[in-house]
Every structure is written in C-alpha cells, then in structure tokens.
Length: 496
Image (cartoon, helix red, strand yellow):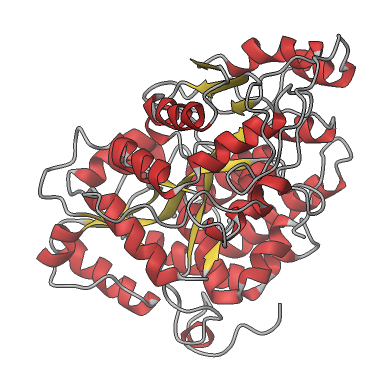
C-alpha cells in the first residue's frame, strides 16, 4: 500500500516509490462463437514477526477502566485515558488522521492523544506486540505491513463488532455498519462473523479510458463483447490499440476480468474460485471470458509489445493515446498524473459483458477496501481506538479525506460539495450504476502467491501473450488452485 495507491496495493510490490472481490450460463452469442484486464493486502510476514506473535510474552499493559456509556459516548470511552494512534505514512499523508484526532480530543478534552506516523510499521510495532504493549489504533499498511492472517490467527486483534453496531457519528438511529460501502464488513472477516479489520479507503477497479479518445471514435463505452470488438476494430483503423495492460505484472488483468466472470456467471462463480473449490475454474463463465480476452489478442487489438511492459510503461502508453482501454484501479489517476494530458477526460467503467444472457446486469464491478485499520487485543484503550475509527467514519471526516487525498473512503457518501477529479467523479458514478452489484474477489489477499505468480504470470500472462490457449490456461490455473487447496502449510479461507 502506500504512495499514490495507498488505497490498495496488495498486488503491486513494484512501483514508482518502491511500494516494495453454477449452473447454466444461458444462451446467446457465446453459444454461437467458440469462445462462449486494482492491494496483497496480506504481505508475507517475517519469521521474526511470526515468532513474536506466537510467543505473546512480555508484561501486558494495564487496561484503561471503562467509561460511562452515553448517547454521545456509545462505546464507553474512558474520558481521561490516553489514546495512542500509529498511522502508516504513505501516499495519503497524515493530515486527514491528524484532523480526526482533533475531533477526538475535542470530544474528550481530559485525554491525551499520542499520534505518530511511520513507514516502518512492522519493525516499529513487532516488539510491542511481543511485549504486550501495542498502540490502541494502527493503520497496518505499506511495505512493512504486518501479516493479517497471523495477527488474526494468534488472537492479536480486537473484534470490531461493537464499533460496527454502535450508532454512527452523524445519525444515532443508524449503525456504523449501515453507513459503509459494499464489501467493507466482509473484508474484515476471516473465519466467522467477527470483524478484525476496518479498511478505510475504497478502490474502484475496472476498465479505464480517455473520454476524449472514445469521443474521437464517435463511440460509447461498449456494454457487450460484440460492441467491444467493434470499438477496438475502429480504434485500430485510426492507429490506436484497443487495449494494453501491465504485461510484466499480468495480475492487473483480473481487475476487469474477474468482475466480468462474476457478471457472466454470477458472483457464486467468483466465490467458488476464492474458496478453492474443485473445478471452479472450469465453469463455463470462466472459459467464455478467457476466450473473449484471448480474442482481443488474436485479432491484434492489444498494443504491440504489451507483454514486455510494466505497470508504469503500460499506463504511460495508454495515457499518451497509444491504447484505448487499460484494466486498473483508481490509483491510476494519481500515478499517471504527470503523463496524462489535461483534456484526457479520465473515466472508468465496469467491465464489458458478453451479451444479454449474462447473470448480472451491465455495471457490475469490483470495488473494495484498502488501508486496513486494526485495534490490537492487548491495547490499553481499545474503546478509544474504536471511537477514533467511529469519528473517521463520520461524513465530515470522510469528506475531509476525499477532498485532500482524492480517494473515496469506506463511508458510503461524503462526496457532496467536493470538487471531484475526473477519475474520482467517474468512479463515484460507476458505483452508483453498480448499486448492489459490487463484487469483491478475495484471492489477492487470501492467496497472494497463487494470484500473482501462478494465475497472473504463469496463467493469464502466457495466454494474453498468445503462448497458451484459453482451454490450456483454464486447465493450468485449475491445477494451481488444486495445489493450493491441498497445501497444508497455507491457511485456507472461505466466504461465509
């Protein structure tokens, strides 16, 4: 995470700043043509951190006494207890958090808030978890992110259900959980109903393009694959490729490919894939979508040389007008700002579907949380940590964040009255169109190596370079998934 794409960045270990979501699929066009592109949130922990969590030794710090629960203090914060808040110092900066701290201090004037920001989350906080003296609230992000699975497995985190069930900061009649965007609560769950993580930022993944370039072709964004092929053919005649993508890091392709699979076959297909169920990748919807993307490659609609481009090179070529579409996440606006023309008209859309027999409507897209906040189980002031999060999930704090860092938050709103950048405005519009049809594939944060190296590089990368057919790719990826399912050294997760 961190840098420009702090809102996501599980899959992106490389960057300018070394930051280093069964049954029949219906009838239609896919039956006539044989074919039927944005965060891991879990980084690989060091052995030192694993052993530190496992030992759990040290002298645990004394817990603050519980305060009186009132309408204004629903979590029972002790109004004289110190609060310690450690933030990841990344692309979102620290001003938004400092502003939220001021609100906390105003609400509890008798308390002292110790706020700090660092890029060295793990090396700074690992010893404190070991000693039983962790801070009360942590933004666990960046290259030194602590491993979420380990923290949860070793019972190092506080269940945030009391926060989610508390009245929201703005409306006592609405619970915090009912003010959040789709997928936020689920992303914080691992096994069961407990919610261990609150992802504060919100990323929209999809197909990004220049409205100016699309207008120059006298075209609308394509909603069916026939229309997509027609737009790409038109672009090619004008010397512009239809698509490009991060060829060296082809796990960017799923930012549009996975939600397309969900649109075509239903979200249960994506859930089965995440759950590592046998034959999940052999679902007809997967094959149909693989064949659709492969057709882009076979017809010469992918920018020549794309398999050799990294994420910055592909984004630069796209921003300069060499290609019309690119699968990406909402960080691309900030990351490409220095090469994107002022009149580019940055826009994002949900993935194009196959045809009218798709299970979900056009507009279905992948959007999910980033920037994970946690309250350690052994924190002295867990109620204070949750209250600080409750403040951050208010409309005012959310609006402050969005206005300052050009990213959405987990709060479902907070954009009224803010002059949004073109990409952010388009992302908000895409979420409005999606409504409840937001999918959240979990492979990228549950099984990082499987998603990146195997499905991404060895599977989709080879197929989109023209070195493997869709059928061969389906078979190969299913074998990778089966291997992961049988690997007892991997912690396995399932959708609840």
